Image (spheres, rainbow, N blue to C red):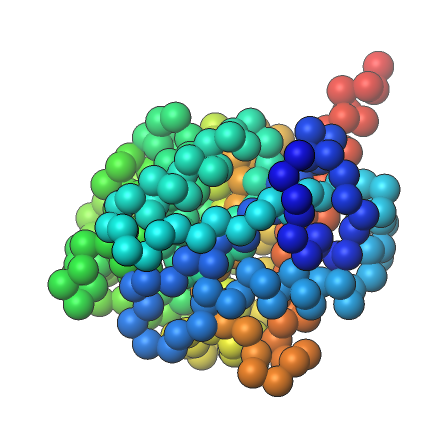
Amino acid sequence: MEPSIDPFLGLSEIEPERADVILVPVPFERTVSYGTGTAGGPQAILEASEQLETFDEETLLDFEEYPRVWTDTPIEPNKAGSIPDNLDEIAERFRKWEGRFVVGLGGEHLITYGILQGLAADLSEVTVVQIDAHADLIERLEGDFWSHGTVMRRLWESGCRLVQIGVRSLSREEYQLIQAEPTIQTFFAHRLAEEWESLLETLRGLEGPVFLSLDVDGLDPSILPSTGTPQPDGLSWRQTLTLLRTLFDNRNCTLLGADVVEFVPSPHPPGCDLTAAKLVMKLIAYWAAAQQKRSQHRLEP
């Protein structure tokens, strides 16, 4: 058994084979283009999580009992290597957890490409649900092919369908791509109120393998400003949780996993670190509650 580092919520050590959820820190930061510090995000989230209660009042789950979460050792790719090699390193670690519910803690958004390369044998079958202030669909960002701002372009080019939520910062090129491509469905922040029910129906209607990528700048910065490129007019806390629960309650899709990326630790704790940790906790709680419902449904006569 590999040693666990700063277990999530301060939970007791368990064998990874017994875990319901695998949490993998990925402190990768090589292409950020404005604010820095995402490499410290995973450790800050894990440390802050120890200040949270293990009981979730909404789902009535107690993490001391269920779900069982195992925290893997951090993936720290060799910065002397190329970015594609770094992404391969990330993919290799996640590949060993294929078939389990895995949550990656970033780090910058580019890690999503590596994670999905590890979890999905065929990306053309995968839908990525992306909560994000930015479209991340530019062909190159400041000349870079591999970037936190090109990650969804690279996944789309690999065959992924995209459902983007909360976007409010993009180039004309990205907007034109969205308008032209039926495999990219974008719910812009300024239209969320009028398209809210349509968005929920879209999440309820997803089928096949699905991956959730949650960039914390998708939330309004009044809730979580501690990120590299915050943008006003994002999702509220309750909107975010409603989206997560709606997605996880969908019995017709298979959740490959999720990631929470682009969090920058607050310089003066507790700051936003507790909020980011709570977001990860709620994500896992909703997944686990949905699994319980499915098990009960199968047992019903």
